[in-house]
Image (cartoon, rainbow, N blue to C red; front, top):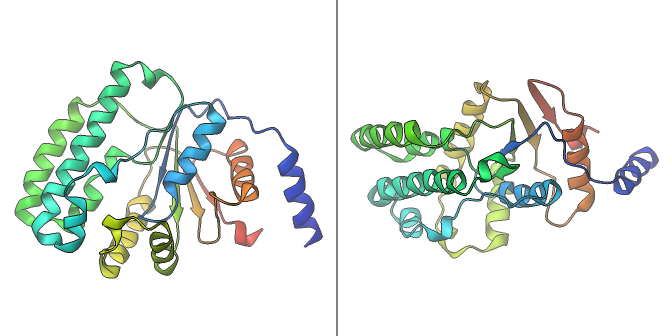
Length: 232
């Protein structure tokens, strides 16, 4: 315990410096895992503005959680157009040359579609996705941070943040999403990957949690890495 305490004190005294080799970082994970909070914190250190999803601007999302079969396609296409549009605006404004921290990855967009759409809808979605992604600005990240947490933790965090449009979220849907994320990143090899056990991490309220993760990122090795603070 004393060693852990001393380590935290040492990290707290360090100057937070962004590792310059990471110019494009994506924070990913299922709903409620804390990816937007972490993206904001990382962007503060990097001296940039985070590029964040805007679920509150999706007019179909609340209805999707109430009646998934009816609103799945509209919800999914709205998010797809929104994400590609954000990348296009960044390119127009020249921001793609700066450090960017995202809380979404366009390449992962079909993950949701496979869960929510029927066969015909997914065929249509795939055609649109392929057209849009083909012409969208490149967004291959230098690092992907994948946050994991079990279903009870996610449900607790969703309830705590109190977004009205998430009140109707179905537990089975969320579990399917967690499983889909696990399969996706198990096979992911396109970029360096950091898998983080975020079940007991609170980036919003614990500066120590964030500093320790940032310290790990600053010393990150190539390929696939795992960060599990409960094992330290």
